[in-house]
Image 1 (cartoon, rainbow, N blue to C red):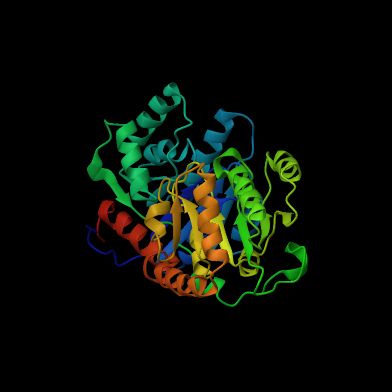
Image 2: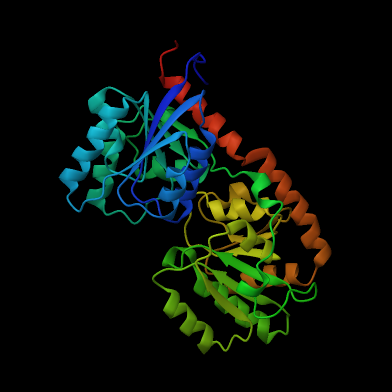
Length: 371
């Protein structure tokens, strides 16, 4: 339950690692655009700048800082210096090892957001992260799945510290976009050849190889479609080689694209075949764009997608079911239309940026003294 509402603004400093491109970065960008004066005074500090850092820095009401050094000691001291300068009411930490410690040292209230299941951490790293999170006054999990996983892995965490705040987007930003016909397609868009799209980092987590295998099944069964893969990453060359070995005739690797809304407007179906997730921003963006989705039931995806209503959920690595669900959507325009309307409505009601900011403010008010 939220505490008493404050009558003055809340001074928030968010601490993170990278601000280039990715789901966490987009969430922070949304916070920066949404937490405006006079309700908030917003600052952010990162270790490595990039595209999102530049966009956040261009906002006139945001103070942005970067402590770029390979030395962990200098990095921490630099962040601590900024925290002392900003004098925040709240230090809100995202994917960084420094925010909670720096906030504790200056007497600020501390919030940690857990963005994923972090199952790749080693046992010593999990122990270290667990001790670190003990400094938090509140812990935000981006989905119930992330919360449940974290409490299983860290049984000494106090459940009453946790709050679930779903990642949010601005729905209006995805409803007046224009398809990028020439950039992403191998041929012009037609109603009879649906475009199946993926948007994200080309890494092991995203499971794109299983999407390629599913596309090969669709091709062998004579189901018309075009596959467009948007994004870049360590596995791009390997995935392109796999597409060639599968003799996929209608696949485009479009690389990184800046205008996400226009990219999504190019698709007819969105597929996210991830092996693990927290609460994927790309999935919510796709639903806001009115795309029916096929996603793996991992992390918080089952909390976003209503199976059979806004899209379909499949088990990770299940190529047969993945292909079957894509085929169902590819061959039924009326089904896609019904799901398109339901997907947009679900985002407006549950996963908007305003809802995310309001629930986050409620968390802040729980731990801040009333003024």
